[in-house]
Image 1 (cartoon, helix red, strand yellow):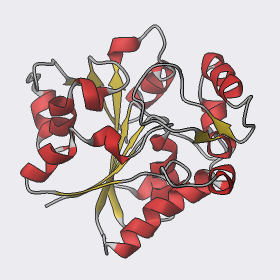
Image 2 (tube, helix red, strand yellow; image 1 turned 30 degrees about the horizontal axis):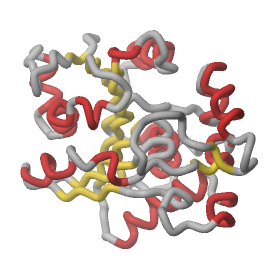
Image 3 (cartoon, helix red, strand yellow; image 1 turned 135 degrees about the horizontal axis):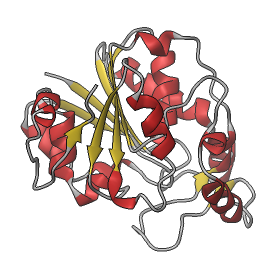
Length: 243
């Protein structure tokens, strides 16, 4: 049995994985979906203003402590990729697998701000203009989204090298929004890195909502083998990039 810890992207909470969680649980796995500090409905302004990347990494590590998890699969969507990288680096060997689901994969000294494109930096700045400490959600989308702590987008990550000891590291590239994705260059970099496995999924950014069955299949233990063989999952032709 695997233990999955699901970390949402910017503005989102645990609810963003609501269609994926039951699929993993029905397959017999333990699943923990997180809502990060500053994004909970009852968080006050001071909590939102002071939450940063360290705060969010600590959210994950505290869960590992509380649930006595010793071999976790951390899944981070979008901004959540920053969080799972920071958490894995400080988790003391308790992370066995990382899955960056259309998510940032930072190197030491990078931030979400520095890793994204100018288009998204402008959107972050515009979204923070009114409050100054939180970025309002982009227009449209799920009404459950909440303003995201600005400091977490800006804080640089500090990695000790422990992250490189995680035995299984994967990146899922959602190819259905290639006109806007900030992850195209990242996909190219990771595809050339033999320590990473790269999957392509033909969905938009919110793959958990568009294709929860395909996302669940990627996360389940034998999904990598199925994808390398070109099996269509959930009606989508997801593939792993060849080495």
